[in-house]
Length: 188
Image (cartoon, rainbow, N blue to C red; front, side, top):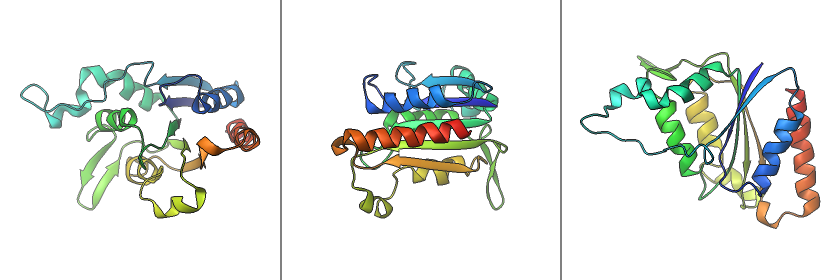
């Protein structure tokens, strides 16, 4: 299986980086794994529309071809990112806006979107500081990526694993979470 990990966190001495390493170390060696670190890549998240950048041309923009090819190559996509202000980091949102475009990831049908990325699955791993009991009442927390983006593009199943209250988590709670991540990664 071809697995693409999309990592979005600017600090490589962070808990999110520990999650990335655990995922990489526990995926079967039988898989082909490619990691895309959006900050290390210095991905440009800015979507531009002007006389030379037309919205209708987003699916063929040359500087996004590398990323479209990675998405096409992948059978399974793993997203690792923190929740900031109830949603994904702007870097990841810009990636979604520039890569998961009409004509590539989906098209418009008479009854809604037609996903072009069928046959792929995804795993979303998020961390955030909100207490776990509050997350069902907050709009995003990984739900937008899962339901409005990936499923609309035909990617399913999509699973979501999250650690709530990360900043105040004990070392033991973080270790248990990393063990959980290791087990899930090992089962892919």
